[in-house]
Length: 352
Image 1: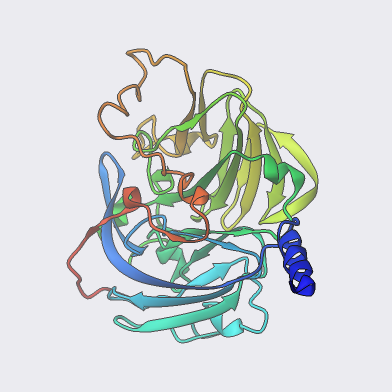
Image 2: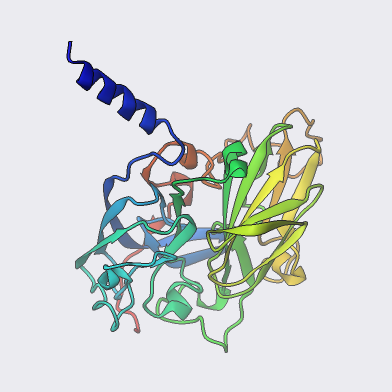
């Protein structure tokens, strides 16, 4: 028997089990950009530019140190790029996604390949960098990118459920007008979490003892102030970076481009609203209630007849992956979510 080989095998196996010992891997993805219509609110359909035909875009879940190759095909009638917000792009500045600075924009029908290392861990995101006031601000061109750290904090290892909340706003005046809107002269009159305004949002279903990690992402151009009833939130990360001194809040202000990670220990069984506390954001087209509203639903709590969401299961309208909670448990890769898919629209000529 080759004892040297045996010892080497045992050593490598032991090393692989140590914290942070996961090996970086090359990962290759294909993405498209489509023109689709999404259902933002009961009374608002909206034309968007959508990554893989959905808003938010597909979840990209990788490990710190992975080498990514992403082929992006533009199937829309306007030019676009992707900026990988939070990634440092060390020795890969051509993949930073800024038109006229790092690349030519991806023209309709063309494909561009981004190659970069996932050097920055944490809650990141990606978005277009062409006409960002419209394409990002009101046209849905954003998606989540989660990079697991090589050495997670002890509290991160206690998490039993991930919840991703991408916060944004919409202009009903420009819902059907590609190439318009997103300027200081327009009015945002609908607000959303993950592209939906209450009551089209979904509950966060938990069990007593769950540890939920909420990843807030400011995807639109306005501020949001998220407030959890019945529970405090421990803010552990800012823009993907661990805080040296985590702090507890019940309300967190999230600006455009910002990310906050909040840990919530589910220790208060019941049913509690979780909403934007900027008062006019809980309206839709000026009518209350609407906007970024969800409900923390504990397992085993009866649903009375008057509870608005009591029929979600019986009607088949419950989407357990609305916050990417299921996708986050499926390992590494790119994950579409059918619940966010839009309906294709006929292409027209649009104003740049």
